View 1 (cartoon, rainbow, N blue to C red):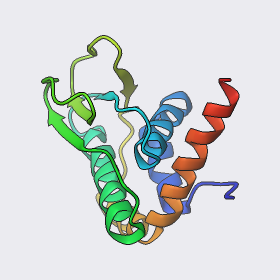
View 2 (cartoon, rainbow, N blue to C red; view 1 turned 30 degrees about the vertical axis):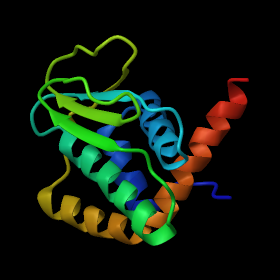
View 3 (cartoon, rainbow, N blue to C red; view 1 turned 90 degrees about the vertical axis):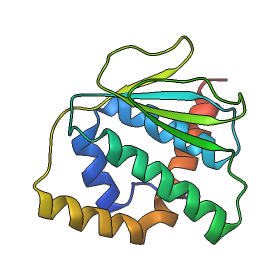
Length: 150
């Protein structure tokens, strides 16, 4: 069991999300990777604030889980600029500048804090190497939150 999140991931996500939004993000990713209940997640923030980076992380983790570990991952749908209904058994990640979420959606807001471009690319490369640890960390966060909410 891991005590801390992987270094590159931790640095990037610490910059993009406030602690409460980070916990929501990691819990929903852990749920997705564990075959949990499908949800709609709205990632909100101004232009160039990390919304696409967060959805890229989700995509990398979903692909990694399917290909490298053989885990079954529910369907994941990515939408930009607004929510459009999809199959109910899909995890939907919506990027938007609007601070509006459909009823029942999980709402996550980026901090707007940005990294220098060279640092961003270095962290994304490091994250590619940490995918297994990131997936394990998010799954553990999900399970911890399930236990704490009983």
